[in-house]
Amino acid sequence: MPWDKDTSTVTMALADEAPSRGHVAPKWRGTQADQADMSALGKEQVLRRNFRYISIVGFGCTLIATWEVVLTLLAQGLTDGGTAGLIWGYLIVATGFLLVFLSLAEMASMAPTSGGQYHWVSEFAPPSCQKFLSYITGWLCATGWQCAIVAIAYLAGTIIQGLIVLNHPDYEGQRWHGTLLVIAITLFSIIFNTFLAKRLPFVEVLILILHVCGLFAIIIPLWVLGPRRSAKEVFTEFNNGGDWNSAGTATLVGFSTTITALIGYDCAVHMSEEIKDASETLPKAMITSVCVNAASGFLMLVTVCFTLGDIDDILASPTGYPFMQVFYNATESLPGTNTMTAILVLTLTASTITEVATASRQLWSFARDRGLPFSDFFGYVW
Image (cartoon, rainbow, N blue to C red; front, top):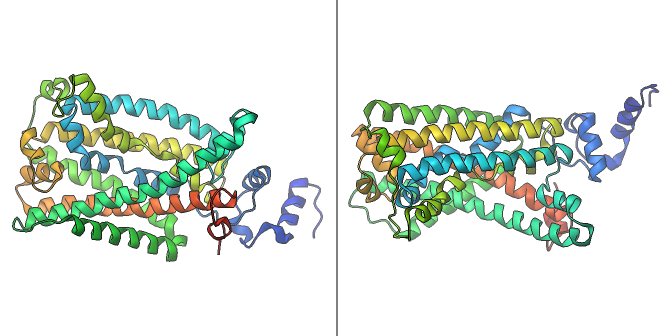
């Protein structure tokens, strides 16, 4: 081993020779800061650090898919809250979540580990209940991300079913048809993550481009061709279609649309052991993802609220998705509606791929810390 007066150089040389560093090639172990973080966390580097700033921004933006989810869950918000409830609720939720994710980003900069929340709980909770609270948090995160996979796949699969209804009015949609589509999209995402995991950073950049360009490919036709509602209608008319005790209660219930569209930016945290210079890159990428998606989601929401036409008409759409009726009413073209909707199917399928990546890392990390049954199996990296 060559001698160098710089202690860090000696440490790096020792690290490259030590078999305890695992089977990851030196070029994939990240920076000295990454290795110092892993040492401080008491973890061994077993994953390749092949994500950079732009690819992890793409990861966060495409997984959350804010403007896509706003469109797919439009029915709930319009029923409970109306256009005014959706817009003002979105601003409130976006502001609140920004504060939440600023806190998470700060903790990620201090302890960039794939465990994320359950590790931070073990660090910051009172010593008397650290283990219990960390264990509960780990289970909530692990099961939550597993369920999130199916949630996004469900949206993509049933949108395809809605397109079939739109193009073939005589088609009688069955629930099991949608279930098969959900299973197909989920299996595709798992296979992709199994055999093309090394290509995931590159794919995330491509999907980020689709995510941004797809936004304008949808809102521009709506701006040009869609009907117009007045600003007073859009910003001041609330709706209580769920027959709640007041319009205020209905609006709060309708927050489920905007909350779902803006939740989950901790996804990037669970990839932290695959990010180069994670303690610096990760928090920046998280907040960038929040800002990009919040802005694009708001732009899409305002556009749709101004161009949706008659609310009762689009809520009665046989496709099951009001946004599809909005597209068709604006373009008066099946090919145009199919193309615009296909963009959502592609981005939501890409989101499912990213969901699988996040869920698998969260599950692996929790198993590595012996939090799951069969931890030896789930915590092993090939």
